[in-house]
Amino acid sequence: MARLGRRYWQSMVSKFDKSELSQEAFCDAHGLTLGTFRSWLYRLHRERREASAAPKFVEVVASKSSSSQSCVVVIGKVELRFDHVPDVAYLGALLRAASGAQP
Image (cartoon, rainbow, N blue to C red; front, top):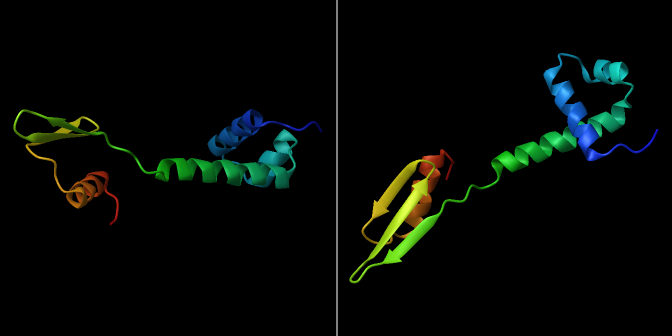
């Protein structure tokens, strides 16, 4: 059998995820080697988990006015404005709380 590429395996794993078949039954139905299928299944699921668990970055914009510094923090559709640049630890705690992450 010719070496099948990532795009093929992404398609097969997507079909499997939508099916109600066991891994063995799915492989039998599609003529796949169980070991190779499992390797791709676990790899692609792990990559998906890691991508969704990757830290999300939030843009923090500091601008200088004539006499003071202000700070705007945008989280999705929420915009927080500070008349000064908050402490980094405070911003970190705020962002963790907003994202639901554990400290």
